[in-house]
Image (cartoon, rainbow, N blue to C red; front, side, top):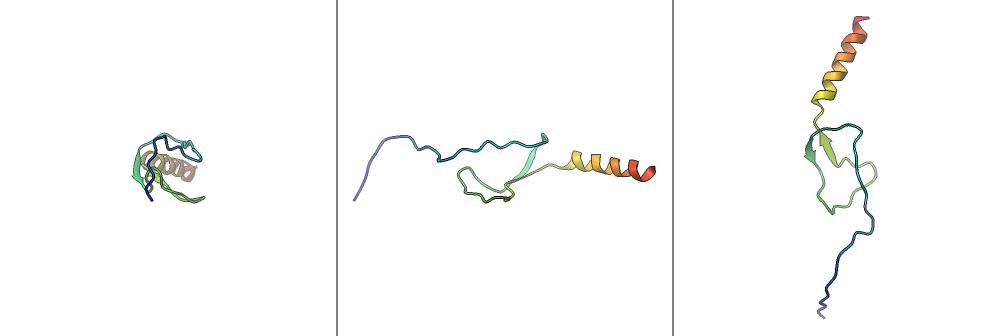
Amino acid sequence: MQIQANGVVQAVRKVNLSSEDAGRIVKLYVQEGDRTAVGQIIARMNSTRLQAEADLQQKRTGAS
C-alpha cells in the first residue's frame, strides 16, 4: 500500500526555552525534533564569566 498526501506537519506540543543568564552555548546535546526527558541536560553554556564572578565573591568572603 502506498499513500500520498500533501499537507503541513505540526508538532503536538511546542516548548519555548529560555535561560536565566545570557551566554554562548558551547555544547548542544540534542537536535531539533529529539525527544527529551524531564531533567535531561540539553545544552551547556560557556561558564567562564559566571566562574570568574563566583571566584571573586569567594575571595571577598574569605577576605572578611
